[in-house]
Structures are given as C-alpha cells and as structure tokens.
Image (cartoon, rainbow, N blue to C red; front, side):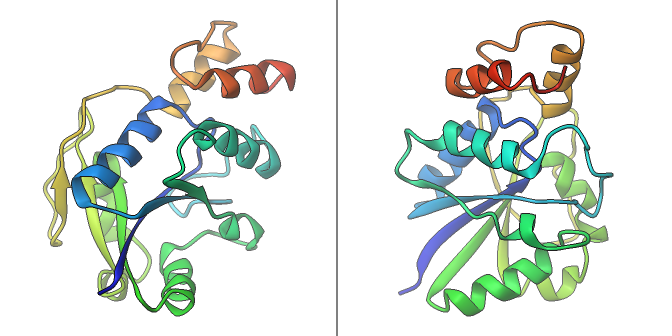
Length: 189
C-alpha cells in the first residue's frame, strides 16, 4: 500500500493561516500521512515577487509549521534556476518516493489555471489534484479533481504584503512567530 503524501506549493510570501488550515484540512479529510510545503522560486504563472529572499520565505515557512509534526518543507524548487515547473518536481519526487501516492493541493485560483500548467497531461498521471474552495473562484475543471471544503478565509499573501507596505499590522493573519520574524527583519517595508 502506498503512503499518501500531500503537496502544497506556492510562494508563501508570507505564509499565513489560510495556508495552514488548507494543509491541515486536506491532511485530515484525505488521510494523508503528511503535507509537504513546496515553496517555489519563480512560479510559471507569476512574476518573481522580488520582495523577500528565498532564505526569508523558507524561514517563515519553517516557523509557521514548527508546531505541526505532520507538516514538512521541501526547498528543492528554490535551488532550481528558471521557472519552477511542478511537472519537473513531481518527476523527481516520484522517483525518490516510488511507494508514495501524491495529492497536489491547489486553491480555487489554480483550479481555473490548471489547463495552462506545464505538461499538464503528463502531470495528472503523476499526482492526484485536490482542489480547495476559495472565495471568488470557480471549482470547475476539465480534469478529474477531488474537491475538499475548507472554511472560507479570504486571506492572500498579496493582501498581507499590501497591509505591511501601508504600515498596517498583520497580527492574527499569520502565526505569531512569522509576524515576529517579519518585524525583526523589516520585511515588506
């Protein structure tokens, strides 16, 4: 029997409570052994944020997941040059973990974008996609996606960056350790 592993990709710039709730709900509802947070360097669908370094984003994720033994972080995409294609990563991971069944967790915004993913027809043979409801986005997809419901939280990293750039606090949107790290390192100012 294959071990069930969840993957949650993203820029995590910064990681926030919605990320953690999505990962935890997916783990519980799908019976996953663990969820791996997979920060990317340059996501194919976005311009590089240019706001925080890979080291800062990695540290913030480590702080955010420190209290949950079911969560891990894999920084392999941060060390790859060029765009971070999920297909390339999952080729690597399926070779490294041949006895794992991977569930790739995506938000509603990515469900709509899925047909544009690099090598999507090959990628869907490597992972099972799990779509998570997100306010303002459709869950319709031409692909076979398992959908799970999580409490709707209209929080995004972009919204948090905007708050910080305007001098507004982000307390309660992110774990306190992440908020403390952001303040100490003057990120997003």
